[in-house]
Structures are given as C-alpha cells and as structure tokens.
Length: 301
Image (cartoon, rainbow, N blue to C red; front, side, top):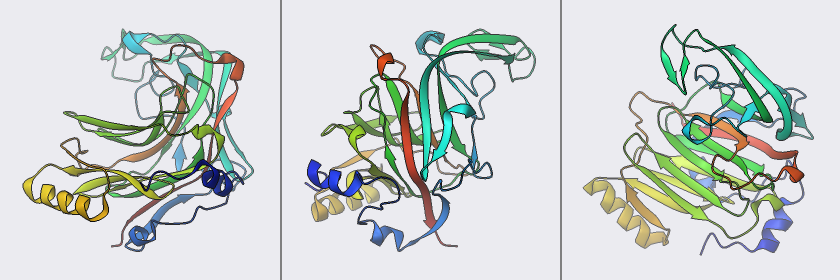
C-alpha cells in the first residue's frame, strides 16, 4: 500500500532537521497550480503580514477555548510568548505555567456568547497551561495545502493543522497521543474522519498535505495519497469509482464537503491541550509543535 513507508526510510529522509524537503510525488498536482502562500519561517520574528496569533472569535474565545461543558480547567491560554522562530522553524510551545486572562467579552453589549459570557461584561480566567496558535490573515477557496512538521510527544496535547472558517478540513490532528494521526472534513450537517496509527509521529519531521477541489478532497502523507472523499452525486460517484479502480486508493463518498460557494478557509496551526485527554503528561512539558514550512497552491488565474 502506498501509505506503508518503512520507519527506517522515513527516519533517514526526515530526521535530518528543517529545510530538507522530501522527495516529491505531488509534482503532477503542483504542476497545475501556482504557489500563492508560503512561509519558510527563516526570519527571526513572525511575519504578521501573513499570520495573526488570535482567532476572529469574540474574547475570551480569541485566546482560549473551554473544555467540554464550558469547563476551562486545563484549557491552554494562547500567547505570543509561546511562538518562537528558531533554526528556520516555527515553534509552538505548550507550557505548564499559571497566567490570568482578563478583559471584556468582545461582543455587542448584552449579547450571549456562551458559557455565561455576555458582550460588554468583564471576565477573568486563571489558567495552568499556555500554548500558541496561528491563523493566516488570508483565506483560500480550493487548492493544495501542505506543511512539514514534527509533532510533540507529550500525552494530552492536541497539535492540529486545519483549514478553518464556517466549515473545516483537517490536514492533520493528534488527539492527545502522538501515535494517532487523524484527518477529517465537515460542514454543518456531516462529519467524516479517518485514523492512521502506524508509528510514533513525534520521532521525526513528516510531510502532510490536502488537495481540495470542487469534486473531491485528497489527503497526503509523505506526499503519497492516503485517503480521498468525493462529493455526493451520480457523476462524481462514477468518477470516484473509476479512480478507485485505477489507482487502488482508499476512496469514500461523502456529503461532508465544506461549503465552497463564496467561502474561504484559513490555514491554522495550533497546539492546545486535548479536551478529552485522560491526563496531561506535565512531566514532559514544555513540549513543542515544530513546523518547517507552510505552503498553499491554487489554480492560476
């Protein structure tokens, strides 16, 4: 199977460190596209013309997300101090440290924003963990999204690279365990996900990518296709069936496509505390999501 690279080969190619691009098997896809966004993180400070460090959610959700049932215990406060550029890589760091986040709920006065917060009210949240997140300032509608990254090993962390707006496409996410690699896509109606668990992904840099078109979404690992979903519909179903017979890729036909009509998705790199983790491996902190580069390709105009 294409996905079954040997651990030895992965280690030889990817354990060298940053700026060692893997051998490309996406060249056919990229030949049709133009590079429209790129950050190699080779500068000394974050390029704030490309990225912002808080989300567009109203405060306090711009810097912190509650665990289930509006429980903020162990939720990580996202800070710029935990974003470090070093040796040509972006480092998003999770730490055990107490910090207080206080301010005014960022919504129209009296408007409920969840968890008993109302616009214009003051809030104060004392957190035991800090971490970091980046959102691209620009969004994109269809294209190839890729990164090369080394995820943290500490149990209980939630490293994720996703394309986010009203709907989502997850390029990779790890739910508190560096052995459990998930990809997913969803809109407001449906959600589809697939898990890959063949190694400890924290032991080396790996290449992750997703190619989003109006007809299908294909995920890649080490530049090899690992899963495709197709938009529901007879014509698309036939195309997917033909493609499956041609290349033996694991295809799945779903209606979980993001709404791409007048919509865009923003690349987001985040490191958080996993909401449903049985425990957080505090003894392993600090731990880091290390990103070599992020790139976006689209069809030429």
